[in-house]
Length: 334
Image 1 (cartoon, rainbow, N blue to C red):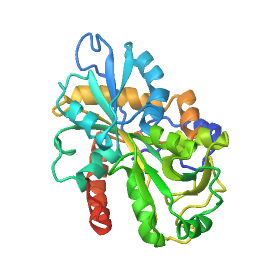
Image 2 (image 1 turned 120 degrees about the vertical axis):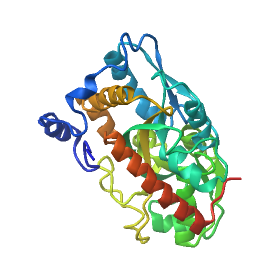
Image 3 (image 1 turned 90 degrees about the horizontal axis):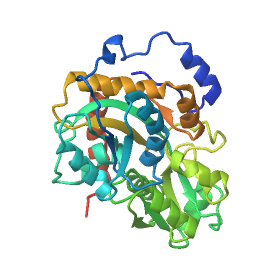
C-alpha cells in the first residue's frame, strides 16, 4: 500500500518528499488508458454519503476542482446523507458501470453498516468495484467550550456526576461506535443523539444541544482553531500532526482504543478494468498534486491512494473487525 504521509509529518516537508518519488506504487503508465473514445462526455456524479460539512464532503471539496480539470468535465458532488450512508451506497450499487456515477464512501457505510444491520440493499465486496482507499482521517473527541473539562480524565469524572449528550453522525456511524466504546471502557453512560452526518452533529455541539462528539478531524479542525470546540483527545491510536500535543484516548488510560474514518472510491459493480484504471489514475494523480497534499495534510487528513486489490483487502479486514466490535458492544441498528 502506498501512503502519502504520516499523521505527524509537516505538510510542506511531506510534499517535497513525495515529489521526489520517481514512481508511484500502483499507478503504472497503463493506467492512462481511456475506458472509451470520448469518455467522459458529460459531468461525472460523485455521491457523498453524508451531509455538507462532514468529513467525506470536506475531502471531496478539496479533490473535485482538480479532478474536474483532469477529467475535462465537471465532477459534481451529490450529497445523500441519512441511514449511516447506506442510501448513497444503494444508489451507487444500482447505477450503470459507465463511470458517470461513483461514490466517495466512508468506513461507516462500507464496513460498519454491514456489521450492525441484518439486511442491507448491498454487499460491499460484491456490489461495488473498489478503486482506491483515498484517505484516512483520525477522529478527535471534542466538547462545547462551556463544558468544564480540558482532558479525558475530567470528562469521565463529569460524566459520572451529570448526564451528557453524545452526538454522532448517525446510528451505526463511526462516531456512534466511538461513543459506545468510550462508555464501555470508562464505565460511564452518555445519552446518544444521532444526526444526519458530521456537519449537523458538529453544529449541535457548537450550539450546546449536545456536549461532545467524536468528529473526523478534517471537519472539526476549523471550529477548534476558531474556538467553537475544545479538543479533548484523539480517538485513533496515533496523535495527529495538526494537534501534536493532544493525547490519544489510549494514552489517557484506555489502551487499545482506536477508531477513525477512512474514505475510499467505489464504482458500481461490473465496472471494466479500463474504467477502474482510469479512475484510479485520476484520483491518485490528484492526491499527488502539491496544493491538494498541502490542504489535506493541513487539516489532519492522511492521503493514501492504494491499489484496487489493496483496497478490497482492507474492506475485507475491516468488515470482520467491526462485526466483532458490534457483537461485543451489542451495537445494532434500530
